[in-house]
Image (cartoon, rainbow, N blue to C red; front, side):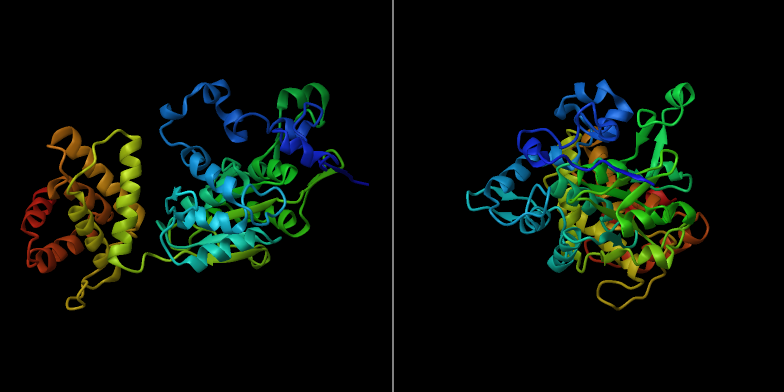
Amino acid sequence: MPVTVDQPAPDAEKEEKEGQKPGTSAAHPTQAHATGTHPTQAHATGALTTDARPADVLRPHAEDAFAHELAALAAQDDRPRPPRWKLSPWAVATYLLGGTLPDGTVITPKYVGPRRIVEVAVTTLATDRALLLLGVPGTAKTWVSEHLAAAVSGDSTLLVQGTAGTPEEAIRYGWNYAQLLAHGPSRDALVAGPVMRAMAEGMTARVEELTRIPADVQDTLITILSEKTLPIPELGQEVQAVRGFNLIATANDRDCGVNDLSSALRRRFNTVVLPLPESVEAEVDIVARRVGQIGRSLDLPAAPDGIDEIRRVVTVFRELRDGVTADGRIKVKSPSGTLSTAEAISVVTGGLALAAHFGDGVLRAGDVAAGILGAVVRDPAADRVVWQEYLEAVVRERDGWTDFYRACREVSA
């Protein structure tokens, strides 16, 4: 008969208030792996992670980069919180959508889009249903997933990155083979995966690119999501999820190499579709915000007049993506790539680096032209024809775009 393990001690809440995660003592083998600053980092980098100063980290985790906002929200959040949540659902939504707190603290928007989408996503995590963020590439699924986990659990690092080679052990658990060979299967030899650690501690786990994972490995989640248990048949035991546990998965069905979710697994999720930005101005705002954040982390100078080039990049991407110009007068062919908002951010960031290191610091058409060409022309034969036709039929005739046309023609030659 299986033995239920990893139940929180009666004084777990007291331990949590005193600054210790419940059940993280050395006598608790599964959760002993999860102690330290960030569980995933502890396994991956050891002391290197704990020695690095936040200012030296190239890409801080959401809970570190926006720690002051999370702390301000927690201090003023007097609404009911689900078990083991760091913030109330209202505060989590405010963290993602932005706003101004009564004390004047400004919460920057992490997601620019319909408020209802965020509210449904947050509400789902407060139930026993897992959350599936679905959308075409570049719709901020990973970004939203990370910030949701940071706001709910204070830790976004319990992550399984889905690839075609993701094994079942990445979702369930693995083994310390030295211990396994020396002493046989035991709790000391078991290495808990991110999902197991989240179950044991009542936290939020993340599975990125779920549709990249082979179908038989995907279905490992079915028992976890339906029964809230993770069997360990080698030991005749199981891990039962404690209150506060939930899972966020991201997926898209537009890229090559995706694996459809089984109907059994899809039923375990509440699906929220993240749309592309509705308007040019909304997408320009998103790109400008993210480029500014990335530029500051890379110590790139701010581009004083960069908004004009950002608007051009966004306009080009939207027109090629939609197959028609913004005024609806000219139909254009669409290239093979997705031309997502994320790719626009990459193009502008690369252009900003060119302007900073090889120009006068002002973002110009010549700085973004090569990046646009690389984003549009994925298929050297078909996409190049699409791009040339767009340049000649649309860009060449557009008022005020002469410099942009010349720069694009130069890199396309």
